Length: 114
Image (cartoon, rainbow, N blue to C red; front, side, top):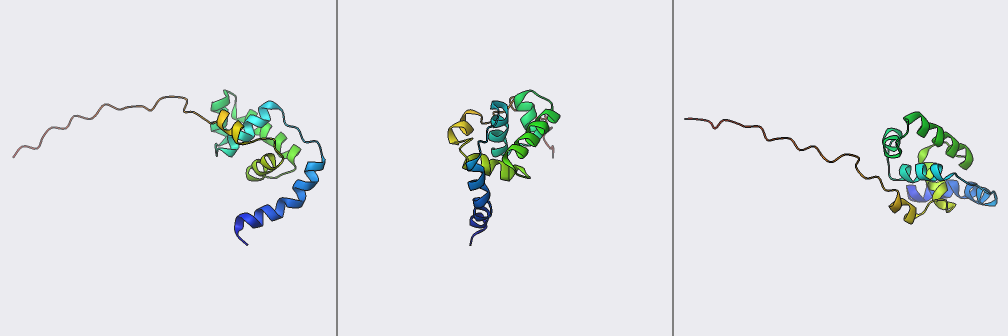
């Protein structure tokens, strides 16, 4: 069995149990999960949402508790499996660079004289 299939099989029973419950995330928690699914760190998510990194950690802890998971990968997987986030939401919340790339002025180099 491939590693991905093993991971899916590991969580299959837990997801069925959670589907029986009414799991709901706040709009901000959903946004945080979507940004987690894009691979952003807590610091990057904080910059994107204009909040402190500790606020992102607080939301992440709430998400982990509500979804009964221990890490970010499990949280993203459960949220997607339960239909709490989808591809459309991922496109809407995709992180855009906050500042344009800095262009440096080319350094002037004197030509080598024979």
